[in-house]
Amino acid sequence: METNILLESGTNELEVLEFIVGHNHYGINVAKIKEILPYKQPTPIPNAHPCIEGIFMPRDTIITIVDLSKSLGLPPSENTRSDMYIVTNFNKLNIAFHVNDVVGIQRVSWADITKPDESISNSGKGVATGIIKLSDKLIVILDFEKIVSDISPETGLKVSDIDALGERQRNTKPVLVAEDSPLLSKLILDSLHKAGYTNVIMNNNGQEAYDKLCAFRDEGTIYDKVKCVITDIEMPQMDGHRLTKLIKDDNGMKNLPVIIFSSLVNDEMRRKGESLGANAQLSKPEIGQLVTTIDKLIAD
Image (cartoon, rainbow, N blue to C red; front, side, top):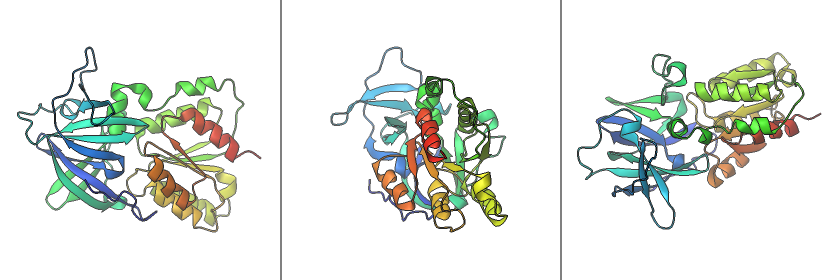
């Protein structure tokens, strides 16, 4: 599969691989994908989670296979002739997802991706992060991190790392966060509060965060009201790379430290973040490292 995950930096675009499970069309950010392979019978693992189909070993790496139809509550494949494995890398994990067919790659803007409303993502239980309308069909962008963390919770955020930091003093310096996942937003907020950061400004996406920053800039209070920005990469309306570029290109806010905190921080995406001026980039499981990085960036 040929992809172009290094799109021009900060353009708010992404490439989505469209695939089919059952009769439904879903999508995944191409930046998460290592390769796509034809289905082969996996090796089952005794007593594994019901959504773990087994393992296989392309080349020299053992990779866990998630049965996506079972994760989504859909009927299993009637035949596997066109089935594929989408092999991914995020949160420092290599995971394959068993799908029924692969359609192709669509290039879209984050501004054209609609965030599901509360009826779909109620109480952080939904696994849809966005919806793309493409001609006569809808493509649902899935939250693969949540699918995996539901199977193995410690792959999401290592909240136990906060306890390892020990007793910490209360810190009222304001930290602004852009994160679209309701579940991760709550975990990040709770973790920062537990680490002593009591003045946390949460935002549902990059556009909401940027609008708030612009308002602070225009009233001349931005460096008083925000000491550090933490942003996810994948978000509807405006992604974290676009947000980082806008901050660092703006003379009125360019000195704000920006931390990219995302499941997508691999070598290629790290180079992209560096080119945009990000002060730090951390993979999402490392919530303890996030706290210590904030400490360093906003120290007097």
